[in-house]
Image (cartoon, rainbow over all chains, first blue to last red; front, side, top):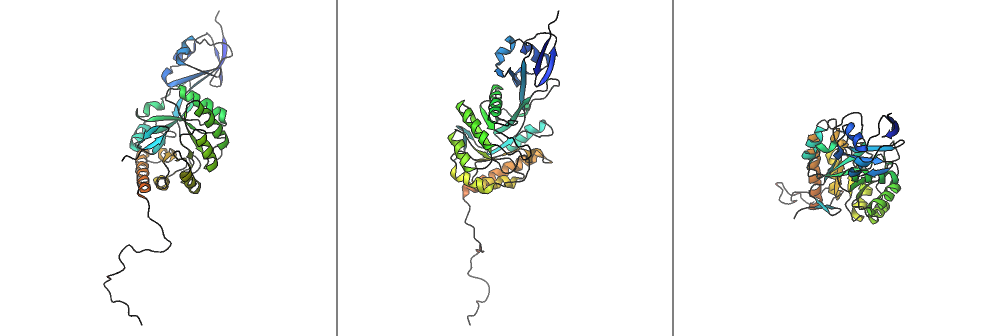
Length: 70
Length: 261
């Protein structure tokens, strides 16, 4: 049986069918790992940790990157 | 001798800083930055839209430009610190423009929270450039807290209103030991020239360039104005007088001398 988790990504509630690592989530969304930073439950996650951090129920994930600004 | 601008131990030859927001097409950014010959550009940090592929602003910034993130979106010191740490983790260095704004109508910065954020971030090793309401006392406190420069506004952000804070900025230029960079509100190149003539160390321009009909040409115009203003400042302007002061000799006129009766 597939395990379902409910997490929050960038402020939006999302239900995921399967438990992944953060790295898998990023790759699944087609994001460039060199251009983003992930905040995992209010802690900045280093790039090395992305592959070892498993998404679990209730996680709060922020994925940010640079945009044009003054 | 080279006229070098030193901010936080780094040397710049160009005194026009350019913001990368509001450009209708990101491809313009590269041409604009090259036309402006800028060495320091600002970016912002935002949530990624994970459901649609996005171009990244970094792809349009020339490699030799120093990138400085702002903390726009921060409403207090804690939020600014959080954004600064995330920006640093993005891997573009430790330069941060602190922008703390809780007023959505005029987008005027909160000097008190800006000072708090400056104190925290300089201790963490950031090169901090705070955006501020022009104020000598706060500027001194920012310098004491380790700010690498201070960035008083010329007019509200994005207003293109010009250099409206001249009198206070003039005092800051005289009294503040770190570079004074006029940021926000400058609308046309003559505004930038005015800042530079007065002795400001640099200006930061975004909206005036991004919303011009021809942003690339306007970037060049700002570059020339900043250079002209700086050169005028270095040259030392002559005194000004209420009455006329003839430029040509007042002797040897081709006319009969007036008879004294």
